[in-house]
Image 1 (cartoon, helix red, strand yellow):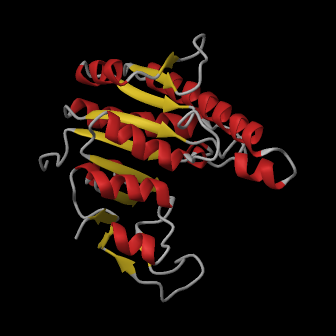
Image 2: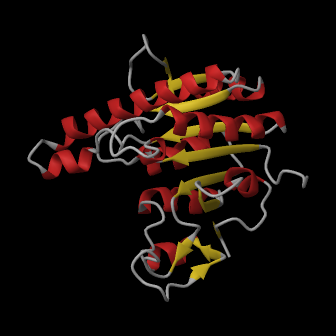
Length: 239
């Protein structure tokens, strides 16, 4: 097996990654598959932190579009990420892989409050970290939370898991002639509005030199290939 390209990673998962074959909610089978893939990385000595979204349960921006105030709508979205984090931790427990949930919102009965110093200690001890609650603030996406946490834990790469095998010049689901990028710069992503992650997340990574690898989570050994840097997906960096 090739040597891992990174020692410490931040994995950004959408809430939809936990859907499995369901239309709504959490599929334990999907959680188990993700947890098992992450455990393989831990066994290679890679330190793993995860930021999880909540779109499989509630998406704040949709709540706002239906007439809710944006702040409480986003707060509901933050709570959805906590539910997903608990489900994912249970999957880790079942395969005997130690993990901790750290939350940006205060909910101490279910998760520890986020503290970057404690986070680094957990990572050094081999525990998987699950970050929930986004940034703890409305109007910020979990993409922004992923970029922020990647900076705080000094991750070497931000892995953005999607259902598409990288970044294209247009939607490959709609356009058969869409062209995939093997590598692309932060500035090109922003200038061409490639919609990899939100602009705040891209700008944070650009300003601090954190590469982003966008890959399809649902292909065979996808996460392992992304960490081994085997040309999985698309790499976003300062070219």
